[in-house]
Length: 352
Ligand SMILES: [Zn+2]
Image (cartoon, rainbow, N blue to C red; front, top):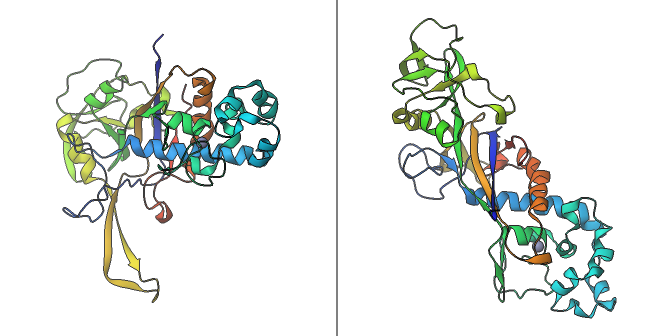
């Protein structure tokens, strides 16, 4: 059996999504978003996925077990001699079973390392910290399912983590047309994601369903007006939870999709407010581009089951941890400007 398991992630933007490059200004917008360097199609980088999902697993875990966690000084007094500097031993001993497993509700939360989990297991670590110092209130604990699954880096020990997130690429992109909102995609995108059930010749814009009632032969995709044909092309939409339907999909040539996406991004203008005067600062008008609401993304997460015995959580527990915390994307979102109405997203379906 391969030690690597891959599971697809399908997600839909429920707000415009802005993951900025943090770079400089080129062209018409001040704040540009991350793009694939070859296709120039915007994407959500895997590093953003890993960072946010790590935070959401820590949030879910700590909110469920906070009341149940022992005071670290209490454990020390409990004659568990091995605690100081050797918490690993404690975690792997049968003492942990009696001490901790009865307390947590869900299987993945029962993992023994979780008894010292804290919210700072998400976010940046303090790289100079020594591991196993129970007095540390900051940085990663180095033992819990968050630290083991996503990795940590300490002065005397670092761990690469078991999860690897790919970028989330655009699978279907909403464009306003005279027939209402349609979702564009391309043959390459469908093939790469294994969604195309049959071959077809890619020449021009194709309406995926012959049932489309429009009888003209042109369709406007944003400001582009293009000739189209209708074909019955079977696309596997089973993982999309009925968010879009076959009749609303238009396949555009690979040579055009980047241009259509980039000319239909959401562009918003904001002003910076002077915090003392409470008025807009001079010259503080700025524009930001974002991936629009309704965009469907596809990517994957790979888990690497390393040899680690009891000191590593089981993969099944890691998948449960991700599934139980994915709903935070719907409230807290991803990327920048989440306080300005950006960033919320829905993970469609469970990782299975
Ligand atoms: Zn931790």
